[in-house]
Length: 191
Image (cartoon, rainbow, N blue to C red; front, side, top):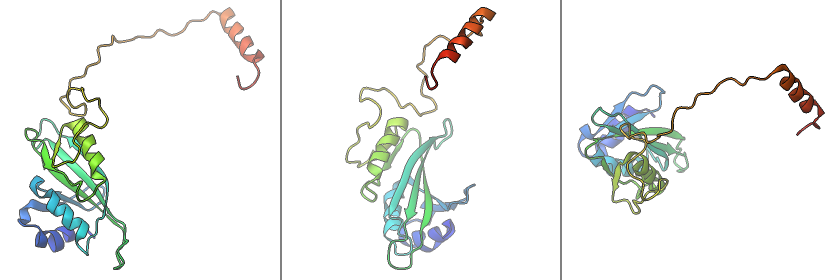
């Protein structure tokens, strides 16, 4: 099933304004749709529950920061229909993208649709600062609670203040080289 079929036949019939969902081209050929941030829950529910779709597994959720472009963030949801539905379903994949403005950086949670989104949304918040409204546990998951900022944002300041190290080639005399070789030969194998 291609993205146009998903959008035209199913989503636009069941999800309010047709301009909130569109098929987009993908270089890798995976069917891809773009959804307005305010419709992500409604579209997610249709993707999971519609008999012709049954995208019952959220495989992954991540984000991309396109700073300084607006909308700044692109959330990428990778969905799977396992084919387990009893109605002749075949396994299929779908990529759902949601563009989020940098100033707002907020989108509704889909953890009520796909429970596995709980941790993935926490990770996206932790690294990019995108907030998921209605999330049941919005705490940081990987970074310490007192961490300031979001390290995968392109404008995150690099905090490494280590001086640059330069190395000089190791110089051995002929006698030191021979002594090292003899010591290596006298060691038992495997040491």
